[in-house]
Amino acid sequence: MMVQQTTPEAAVSGVTTAAELNVAGTRGPSFGEPIVEYLLRLGDDRLILGHRLSEWCGHGPILEEDIALANIALDLVGASSMLLGLAGELEGKDRDADALAFFREGVQYRNALIVELPRGDFGFTIMRQFLFDAYSVVTLDALASCGHAGLAAIAAKSLKEDKYHLRHSSEWVVRLGDGTEESHNRVQASLNELWRYTGELFERDTIDEAVAAVGITLDRDALHAKWESIVNDVLQRATLTIPEKTVMASGGRRGRHTEHLGHLLSVMQSVARAHPGATW
Amino acid sequence: MTQPTTVTADESALVAAFEARIAAGESIEPKDWMPERYRRQLIRMMSQHAHSEIVGMLPEGNWITRAPSLRRKMSLIAKVQDEAGHGLYIYCGTETLGVDRHELVEQLLDGRAKYSSIFNYPTLSWADMGVIGWFVDGAAIVNQTILAKASYGPYARAMVRICKEENFHKRQGYEICATLANGTPAQREMLQDAVNRFWWPSLMMFGPSDTDSPNSAELLKWRVKRKTNDELRQRFINLTVPQAAAIGVTLPDPDLKFNAETNNWDFGEIDWDEFFQVIGGNGPCNRERIAARQQAQDEGEWVRAAATAHASKQHRTVQAA
Ligand SMILES: [Fe+2]
Ligand SMILES: [Fe+2]
Ligand SMILES: [Fe+2]
Image (tube, rainbow over the protein chains, first blue to last red):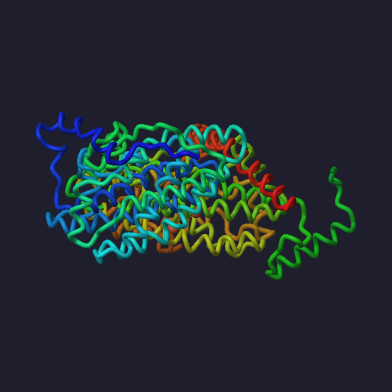
């Protein structure tokens, strides 16, 4: 199986022009402290994906999956709460995890685009989850031994949970891919749609370089290779094929989101924003 | 298979032995002989209970995406997940009586099986998440603490386990209410409004007065039930009145008054017309609740088919190996 994909660098430079058009002379909105930005990226990924998963509560295809998806959502929101909490602490502007979750605008969110896409059918949800879980496991595995003690501790805890998530989503990808003709076609279509959002997960920019100063040095190419080997193995067992010649989408890490995020946030933030300053 | 409709001499001896065991406080296990009516009563009660757990996920699930803090979001997801677990556990218990889950779900979807009337009311504000935990899980605890001593072993054991979690839900719900009660004027108003909407429907959860409850007498004799609907309702009211006072919330019943002779809180007339409308399918959300379950069932069809197909492929591979 050939994996055809634009390089992360190409994906980044492909959208830089658009960002420059948006904000004259800059690459989009100004970044805060690199470590804070870095933590927001990790935290926002998990908050938004956890939120999407929680939309399934009460609507799953089987009761066991209502329970499993809720459990994964819970882990992800829990991880986001720790990551955003640490981001707020390091930022030093008196914002806690809730302030960051409920009182930032869409353009201030730093999640990858893949997690904000609507939940779609169960196959789409599972395929997205699988692609993300594999990314999360290889990333957290590296972060668990990074030089930033606070982040390393959170990563180590989440890694245990995410390994379970990855096993769960991998099993479902295989089941659906190698199930019936209908399930195969549905989940293949989801893979085709989702693939263009995977490049962003392995992009590297100035933030990734700057956090080396606080002990976070990830080898993105090595992580990407590990991710590919997990993905290739599972997709092969699922009799699914990676789409060729995909132009990768990008922008989430700089606040350039799809239109879906705004709607998600308008729901998620509605109660908190209607009562600013209230305690819940 | 046709069941004989007359009770044979053999069977009446079995019934006598069965009733003697119940009277002696023994628990009945799946392999034990039991009268067909007992079995059917239990299937009816247990499946109704399981369906209530599942349909009950919907009104609270409605606010997961809008929970106002990450902590509340997590505890609400966890609660709804617990309810799914309760449903699953009780469906499994019901299967020990010889019906499968698939059949029970069909009965829910086509309207043959009932679920708790309370879940046909809409959740209109965040405060409903507090009040449902406090009232609805609270009422469930009052019911289930008694059911934990029911004669059918698998049901009684399920109740023991489930009751622990319902207690946690109730505390959590009450804590949401207490937080709102200490909050801004808008939060207090939101709380009082939720209490006003859920109080009477919560009292209806215990079912009609026993004089109007068609199944009560037999259920009590066989220790499927241990207290009357009215006794349980009174117990719930007695527990809840001081809790409302403690957080400064008014229960919407002008006739609520302590009776020093009976040591009970006397209360006003329940609108049983409303109750019978709701269980008859005409509550505010009956159609939405069943439609949501039906949609989940329909949209999940291809997923279940894929899982079955994949499992049988695996099975063939293992056999060939
Ligand atoms: Fe977990
Ligand atoms: Fe429950
Ligand atoms: Fe509960």
